[in-house]
Image (cartoon, rainbow, N blue to C red; front, side, top):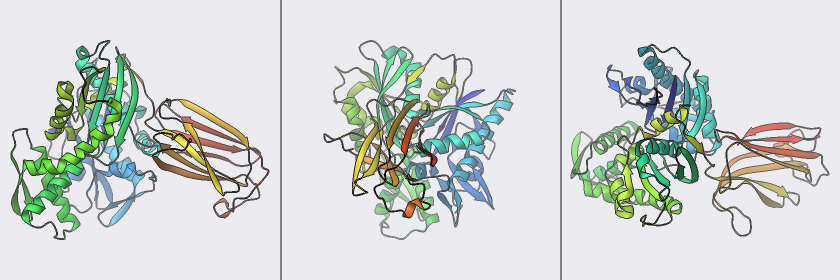
Length: 485
């Protein structure tokens, strides 16, 4: 049985492949009630890691309860060993992700059992468009270790485009052949421009913000309530702050376009927040997403463009201010998914269905390059290995050269563009690797970089079908290093 799984910052939703249909999977919460999602939370029950509804059973005030752990993964330096704080103790991120993946897979097996299906579980996972390699690898590993076959990872906006085409194919034609996905989730914002030809989808470009989503709106609303209560400068403990954010989240999710006020409990007292005040605070965040997205669309007036529609998905796009601001700017071609939280999961299930006929040609969201030392370590050169405008999946690039120094110091980065002089624009460090080119070196980290007539070196950069980048550095007659970047 095949599923699409959207591992969201606040909620995880799965959809199943069912003879050309892609219904969202229902799961039982701790009260035995049917729900269409699993909370993306983990906690400690004694010494045991629990996740999802089992973690929620401990209560929102449990000090070990951790929400939005997916945001930790956006840090470029994250590894499986990165500590996650649960109350007063820490657990490795890899262990936390595995516990959560086990919970999700257990729910899928329960659904499978309910319809008496015994086939192996195969899944396609969603991943933020701007996710780096470590985030992709950690997600892939957690679900593989949970005992399911991972067919692939697809960028979340690209999956939502599948759902759009499946639902709104009549809006696409030879003149209007592009979809712009606006994906605002609980913790991340992604946007992709996708050209559609029948069931063939090609990603033209992707942008995103790693820390922008519903969690930020919750904190803004909590801040508004504290201001009105005259308690903005009060010191709140971790438990009290968590409770306040939960109150704000509940109030925000009850908002409808006609709402005029929200009620948030602050220190056991109800505080009324005018919706207009909350929207004033939230407007700059939404504007930030529009500014980031603007290079993909080029203009505010869509009347003469090839864009058939701007599709709003992700749980945070349910905030009424979001479609309002987009429609004020772009007009009637803004469409909000009827199930914004489940759109990506449905698209992932479509991708998992070999009979759907949907095909995706996707490029990585950013380029990959490497800084190298030269002039005995006194200067640095930049080699753009993959450019953002030409990078495709399943690519292999090899560099061969003779070492001119005793140590190779490689700093791999993601970058958005190249300046006129060939230097990278906006960059973020992915990882650093030091390799001894001189076989006499035993401690490469403390070795001073010096000129050295060294052996031949081969670097091979690979980006696989899941967007995971890795490099293999081989020194003739010396070390061979494999490194995920």
